[in-house]
Image (cartoon, rainbow, N blue to C red):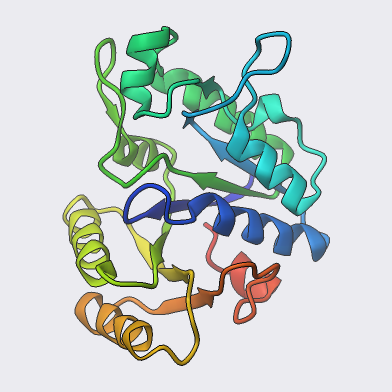
Length: 228
């Protein structure tokens, strides 16, 4: 069975998919057998034949140059760029926890490492009308340790501290923080890093600048050690 890691974030559009792709790429380039998984994916385009393209999965696949099939990366794909619970209300096909678990376990039997990405922040409702599921339920059911992705800029202290406090209250283990869109030497962002570490007790594992193709401060062995 595989070792696994969940990528959560302080909210949406802060770079979880980008960071997940770099993690997958780093392990893959080091010769490790790694896969990507996301339970539900919203805001996707359609192919000419009308089928939906799982955009985040495609980005990871192309960035990391892995052979894993798109179909195995995400069991629930929606067109509307809204929370998965609302997208399924508009489009049908609501998320079922049992399906999420079965598809995840299929990857666990085939791969040595599985990177699991969340949708939005940790409290995001993935299902509601038929089966009430939040991201934290997926993390708990799949027994995943997490890494938090946060934007390095203004406002990040509040988002990081609140996400940490919520996950700590819920008993969801956090391995550390990864800052995205980091500008080395920027006074505010350097202070954000220090303050987030001091106020949460977590380490900032890496700071990623826009356009980085690698995670400079984390090599494959260090990343692999985060997985459980």
